[in-house]
Every structure is written in structure tokens, then in C-alpha cells.
Image 1: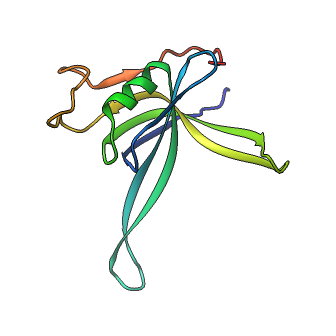
Image 2: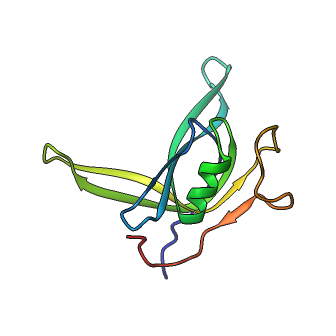
Image 3: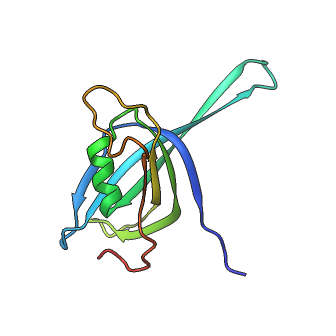
Length: 135
């Protein structure tokens, strides 16, 4: 049986999207979203909240849509998969970064003044399931 690598998140952006382009002119956008969970502390009985930050990578059309319509504080739904990158930094140290590569992004905020929505009916944007690397 094949493994499953699927991530589903709903959270708020911690800063504006950062877009860049590969040497082949392919758009890639990075966003960071926060998810929070509340629980009751067993010792004190008080309500506590923990926040986890997630690094999201969006490619091509998802990248351009994210850069155009999302802003710090925007609420989004993300579907994607975990991917770990490995590289060697300038000092020769091997580094790793685990990110979520998004396949689906849905804007959950209502339209606000000055921000155009890509569609009045549907805020969902889905990336094609191409197995080819964008590089």
C-alpha cells in the first residue's frame, strides 16, 4: 500500500506573501500561516492557547493569486504535502527545511474594500497535479 502525504490547514498569514521567480520565469510564493489550539491547563484550570507556524510554498498560478490577493492577517485554507529540502549553506553546513507545498488554496476572508476577489462565486484555486519539477 502506498503512503499518504497530505496536509490540511486553516490559518492566518503572519506577513504579506513573498513572490520570486525561478530562472525559467516560474512564480513561487512563500507564506507563513499560524494555526492555534486552545486547551484547559490541568494544573491551573485556566484556558491556554498554543500557536504553531507553518511555512507554505505555492507555485505558478497559486503563487500569483496569493501574491495578488493575500495580505498579512488573511485567513486561508491550504491543502498540500510535506516536503523537506536539503542544501549546503555558505559555511558548508548541511541544512534542512520542511515546508508544505500547496496544491489547493482557498481564501476565507470576505471581500474587503480595495481588495478585488478573483471570482465572486468561488475563492478556491487549485494547482494541477503535475509530477514534473518546476525547475
